[in-house]
Image (cartoon, rainbow, N blue to C red; front, side):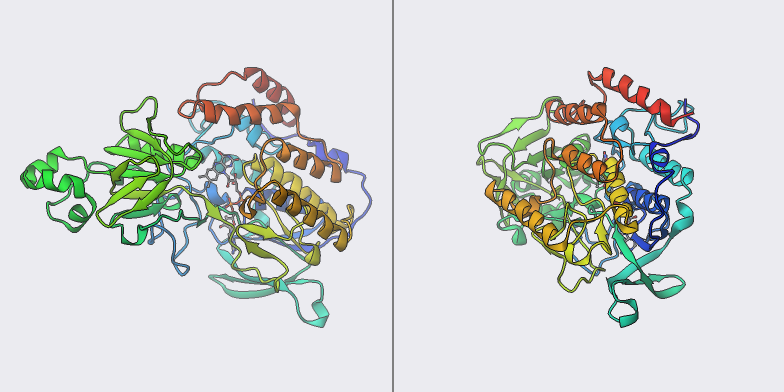
Amino acid sequence: VWNQIAIHRYSLAHSNRDPTTSRHVAVVGAGAAGLVTARELRREGHSVVVLERGSQIGGVWTYTSQVEPDPLSLDPTRPVVHSSVYKSLRTNIPRECMGFTDFPFAARPHDGSRDPRRHPGHSEVLAYLRDFAKEFDVEEMIRFETEVVRAEPAADEENRGKWRVESRSSDGAADEIYDAVVVCNGHYTEPRHAHIAGIDSWPGKQIHSHNYRVPDPFKDQVLAQGSHHYTEACGLVKSLVSSLNSWMVFFLLPLQIVIVIGSSASGVDISRDIAKVAKEVHVSSRSTSPDTYEMLPGYDNLWLHPVIETARIDGSVVFQNGKTVYADTIMHCTGYKYYLPFLDTKGEVTIDDNRVGPLYKHVFPPALSPGLSFIGLPWQITPFPMFELQSKWVAAVLSGRVSLPSQDEMMEDIKAFYNKLEASGIPRRYTHLMPDDSQFEYDNWLADQCDYPRIEKWREEMFYIGFKRIYAQSATYRDNWDDDHLIVEAYDDFVKFMS
Ligand code: FAD
């Protein structure tokens, strides 16, 4: 039974803390990271302005049926749709461990207005974030429909050490000075694409999962015999169909054959979504052996292949296992790139093969700290609690309650981290990937910096078990589990935050 949060551990732990410096801070973005960052900054005594280019809070969780006009999102001048969430999306992390540590993402009473499932749909996550924003009066700090177009260290003598932030809204352009900027702009909007030999002459359609919403466009197609798409893309069936009349084409040939590149969370969901309506779906995975060719359990039209070797002008796509598929569409579920077009650090922070750096502990660039910080760069993690801990740390550093090491020491730490990645053969693009137990080590390190309780054991265990479940039972993991004992522990813990 949920009413309101009565007390939270953090305010109790810090109710008598020493007076600290209050800063004027700009937060870029009002997704989950921006919301909790605003809360933490204000709790620490800072004055906060959140600049959000959208018209509501929630970032990636604000589902829209709208997609970008360029299905691959290659055109840098395209109108950007922020969210990459598809209609059928349910969380891949159990709700108990997904929520902020002091604002449980608990199932609400089943009154029909909320989604009580353990892995709820996207609208429940948005509702949770709205509850959070309401509970902590975050919205009053947000300027909606205000896009940050430039953030840079102020150059004039009077504002040395501060940040100039230029933004654009329907009220016009603004140019303001802040003591610090916290970047919370998300990293699931700018697509990465697979490189496929021969793709430039391949005649089919291509789309990135960023622009996927519903499977309907992949249903049996009504194709006029001789249409450009039909003749170009369906080489193999062409000769068969040309012997039939167009009436029969309409009724007999469900022509949509889709190749989905990528077998991580979105690839798994989207391939199954499309397989419900399309003729065939072929998933190309780089984490499978080169001779893999298998029908996925529970389906008669969904195959798993290794990587694509080549795409050809006749519409065929050849996989590393030697199989050839004549496909209508290639869906790139190949992830996203960090993208910071508004940030001008005069070269102090760069993006190199998807490494944002140099950053001390994925948050502070030594040369520009503590004035510039980033919340939410790590991935393959449970994001909300990490955002919370990172933003507590940033807030405490900005107020002077917690100190950073010297610039040289931070650089040494970063170099040692990069060297470790290199020695292990980990490419730069995985710099912010946190596999295995590194995320909780990191979370606990952050918690220790801020004198905040470490991540609960049940949360850690639930995340690992949940992660394993995704691989072991990818079709059913959201509805079948065997860690009820952890749910009990979680709700025992939640009681202290609910009245
Ligand atoms: P976002 O939610 O992307 O918010 C960034 C905000 O910044 C946006 O509101 C945007 O409008 C704003 N913004 C960007 N640029 C500017 C600018 N220049 N000026 C002003 N505002 C700007 N996480 C989970 O915990 N569980 C899941 O099950 C899960 N599933 C996911 C499924 C998909 C398909 C995707 C894409 C992500 C999923 N995630 C999941 C991860 C999810 O991204 C994080 O949970 C989290 O919501 C990210 O929050 P954020 O605030 O960092 O970024």
